[in-house]
Image (cartoon, rainbow over all chains, first blue to last red; front, side, top):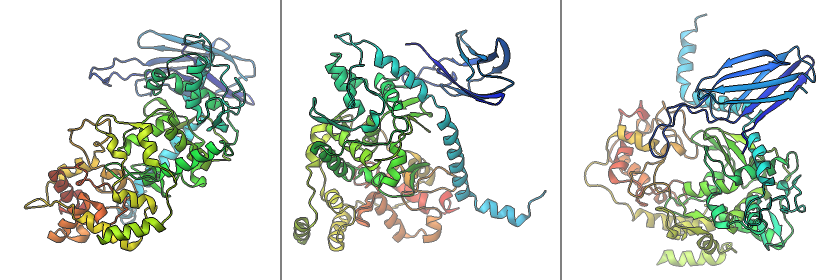
Length: 103
Length: 265
Length: 193
């Protein structure tokens, strides 16, 4: 089954409130599974937000963020139809990306 | 600015109650924040995939499943459950009906589907994803469980009787925790589910994503886990007993606009 | 004998449960782990409290409470144990469920319903606060007996109380109850500081 990201944008004048929901286990590397072995670290390390191809936000995330993170931010100087691209990279080198138009 | 000593002492002495109140305020703030955008939405998307996926020996999807408003009609269907279904001659809640469609439409093994109905954070169950998806299709619709058919009325009465039935080594009934207003277990507020005023906002927030365990949880799961903590033996998934209690609670919550899958601690 | 007569009289006149709830439970529930099916059968106390929605007639309640008092088993010697162990027992919610191993030590689940040590902010309000319990009531033999008895079988004092019969049900051992008595009564316990 595909692992979706979901974006919601709310445009108010020239700024947009953006909310992104991501599917990711965000394992801290401290948790033990049912058999008692450590579940290895597996978490998103970098998040990048681009507007019309230009980098707007670059964030470094740590294990402190819980599973299935929800990121919320406000972009200024945007208009309806602007291309919004959100990408993440995790500590295992796995990536995911989603694109949408600001509405 | 230095606090007067008396004020400082007063603040320290007020600590136990005040700290509990502060915790409560922080929890409420947190609940407002997470209610806005929740991983529950991801389960809705996954549920849509499951709904449309051909499965079982008959290799069909669930899209012809009748949840009470006609085959495949999802808008507003969840808000009308539990209700009587003529083809099964039973009152059914959402999960009971989904199990019925999985077995009759798709030819899948009912016992196996029941066994795997409650997932884990690593492996959510199809039932959980489907519940989120279908419930999401009733956003804003007022809860209107079946009330006219004799079996619907009987389910309500049975649910009510079960709600107040004290048993087990700890002498618990549902009412032991949910029979009074203004109480909490540890820091978890306990709604008085026998009264509509308190049942409404709570019933209208299930199924729900539980942040602390990263799991989507359903009403059938809630029945199961309550009975576990009540020190009872285990109820059968989608049994008449569980449907009866869910009916009782939903009827008590009648009229409340359904909020969509909720988010909890 | 009087209890049976009173019970019969009230059973005939009180609102009758039109459901065979026990039958439904027997049909729709199954044993799992240590949670066996006999748990759905009601004893007299559970039957009466269910029938009267936890407000039984006073005479009947008194009779059944005295029956409950007969279940008390007091330890020989001191009733007061170690409050440090008591605090751990009060914090633990384990025991008696189908997900608890049958012979593993249980807890008292006390913080689920009660406030105890002031340092613990995460406490329930189903039962009264027990803050300063010993400080307010002393720690002599009478109060020790009352506290031990209350934990052993709370229903002896209040028939339809929601407090589990932690001793009578076999959930807590004699030593564990003594440790809880200490938590409540020992002047050194954080409850009393």
